[in-house]
Image (cartoon, rainbow, N blue to C red; front, side):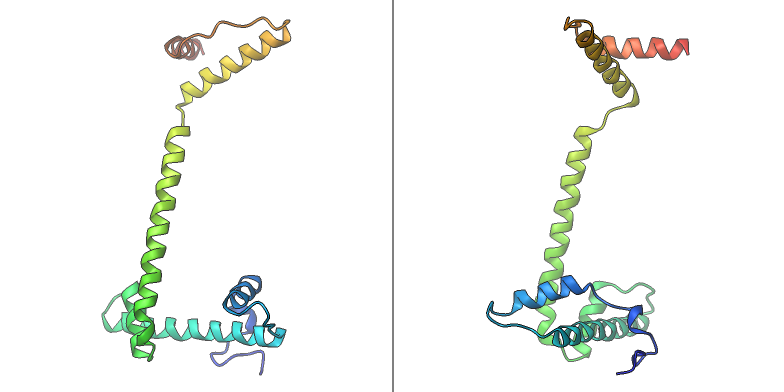
Length: 163
């Protein structure tokens, strides 16, 4: 086949990660089955063409509805139109699972970030406390009394006023 595909783009214009695709292919086959490199390349090209086909049809469905953004329902309708209706339920389930996992991930990251954030004043006070501890260790291991949080903030505010 010519390096230019049917729609006039070179092979480098659109591709899928070879390592990822190879992993997917191997996961779908029994352990004792080997796949020739040419067959892997062909499967990857088929996947790219399938994505192009679904994308193009999804765009047409979207345009018929006078929309400017392809939504998941446009993709599902495109599958129906192209004769892949038997996969719509499975594709929709995978989409719902993806949405759920994405929501879980974002909730986890919010929880992790909300507990770890400090105001600038709190960070400066914590830095001063750590400097004091380090100085104490350097000066013979004498411990430095730990001021409470309000005292740290007051000291920081006084320092800001003097600056």
